[in-house]
Length: 121
Image 1 (cartoon, rainbow, N blue to C red):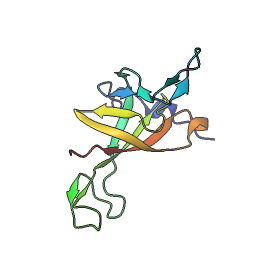
Image 2: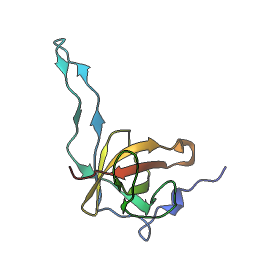
Image 3: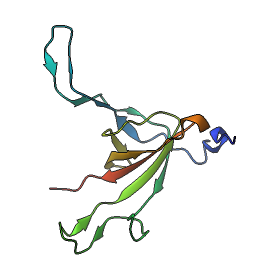
Image 4: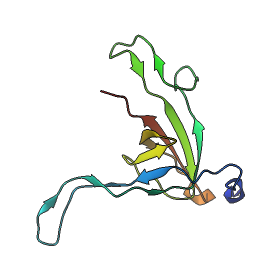
């Protein structure tokens, strides 16, 4: 089995991104419901790779006529040794992304997610 631990070094990894980890709603010790929330942002050592449009294979946000709307969000692929759960927010170079897909690469020593840019309302 190939281990990609050495692929994450100072030339490919950025320490600028932050992650806000999603915490599901739960009952506390007094049996009171605590709503969904996010933990405070912490630094994330990761390798961000532009993922682009899944259909066309192009990078960046686009304006395209679709049945639902006109804007398609930009996607990014992020590799890290730190786990990044679903619905977490990653702030990478001033752009806020939400994790929408988690890859199963734990056995190789790293984690991979696909995140989408939050569109302005």
